[in-house]
Image (tube, rainbow, N blue to C red; front, side):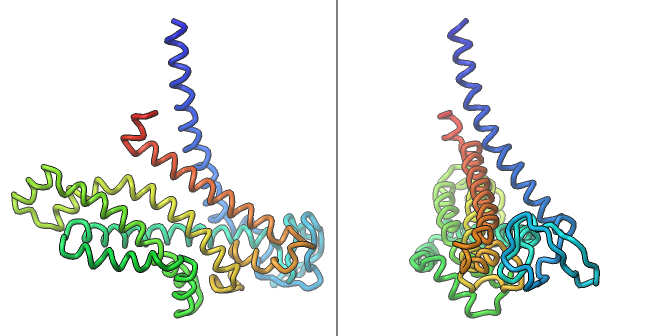
Length: 299
């Protein structure tokens, strides 16, 4: 009995850890999404409102500010103010909306493009070499440099940043999908569908696509985390989101010159970036363990 109870306890321990690895990051990300949606109500002040008399105030500072509607009164700057007198708390709250939107759109766009190109490269034999050499060429360029080059060729904005980040992320998705398709196309049920003269688009949609869904979901989480980091780097370098649009990278960029004297300018957006990327990566690892049959059997 004791041996059976011990085995049950050992099995229950990893199960609880796996459940916590999914539930806790998912709850944190859900909270961030709610913060992004409720930004107009959670933000205490207009994130673009400037007041030179309130420059670099510490967290918790209480001061008077005149809003655009003419109202004035005491306001608590929960995270302090930046070098232009803007409320860091409101900017971080609104920046959550921008950063999460970019991460989600980059994940969707790169996954959709990578799925389409990878299925063609893996199933249409004559196109494999041509497509993969192009993907190898893109992967040879550092993602940050490629993103900077793409942004510099267009007007700065959210759409340009999404495209600039999605382009270097797409080849990784292409390679993943191609590897899956190369394995699946040799399966008996695929050969049977080919023998039955099933149209290629229908064959790919019915037999190949379902096998790509689980790995793509996991890959999309890593792409989302990478996109949030790259967007922050681009904005920090001044080539990403326009400075007037509050994003975590822009907030850190505005406060980098005063980091030693006023570390709160970078501390709070940096914490949001770290927590978001960490939760997305942990959730992706947990989903991989849950969706991958080989890893599931080991546990």
